[in-house]
Amino acid sequence: MTETLGLRERKKRQTRSLISDVASGLFMQRGFDNVTVAEVAEAAGVSTKTVFNYFPRKEDLFLDRYPEAVELVTQAVRERAEGESPLAALRRLFLGMLREGHPLGGIAPGYEVFWQVILDSPALRARTRELVEEFEGVLAGLFAEAAGTDPVGPADPAAPAAPAGRADRAGPADPAPRLAAALVVAAYRAVYVTSIDRIRAGDPVHDVIADRMVLLERALLAVERAVAAF
Image (cartoon, rainbow, N blue to C red; front, side, top):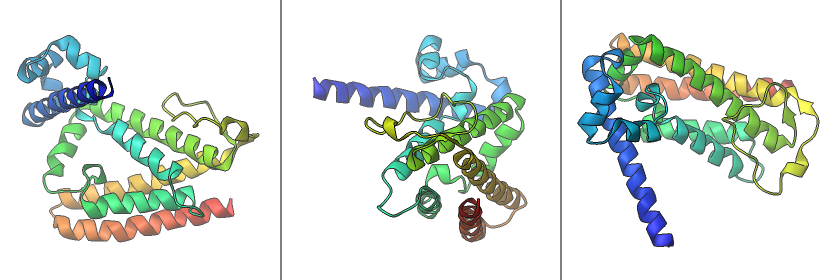
């Protein structure tokens, strides 16, 4: 049974990846708003229903790595080394992804085409803003969990559930987790947008990556100091 489930899960992941890759190729060739889900399904050799089973929203076909981002930050915070703060764990994760050229690092040759597709589509821009807000909620939940408190603000359905045995640590509502999450997102976004602007202006990718690592580390260290002071 275990082996069967493993094969089934691998097949599901392969199908999801195939659909997303085909969709991304079509979107980058013709523009997001000029491609229908039915066309994606036909090109991928699956039904439209299958596409929606994996991607409830068309925009998520292009922004398909968001679940992976949530998984990575959740793992980094929950499995951080003893004595390491959640913010330090995230800084280590973000710099490591950039150093290793991880796709979620967001900077690599050819990425300007990806960004242009988003910039050209109001629907994709709106969905990107939604995902950034959801991601901030995920971080707030993780920081609150690590501190044993409840974050101030509405519950976020995208936030990861607390692991078994830790619910009893919850205490009074605390504004610090949500503040920390907002500062992390703002700092990361500012550095990210700066890097995108430089690459679109023609700066060498290698130089942008090197400068981004320095700027990102400084920005996240500043966030740690700000949160500690708060």
